[in-house]
Length: 66
Image (cartoon, rainbow, N blue to C red):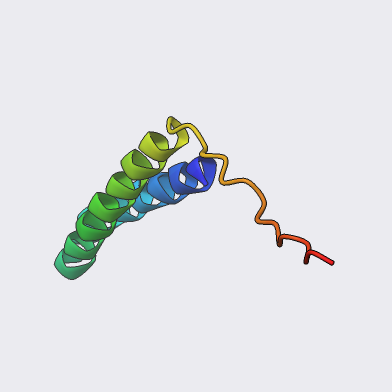
């Protein structure tokens, strides 16, 4: 997921540069908001990759006594 988020961030930066060049104010604002979201998602994802998985085990059904 992190490589895809990095790719999206790169594309947004390029889109924002084009919007600045063309003076598309709405596009600049939208790019800024989306970049903030992507960067937050990257930080959250990176933090979650550091967590140790928890083994929950496999539930079992007790056999009936005969």
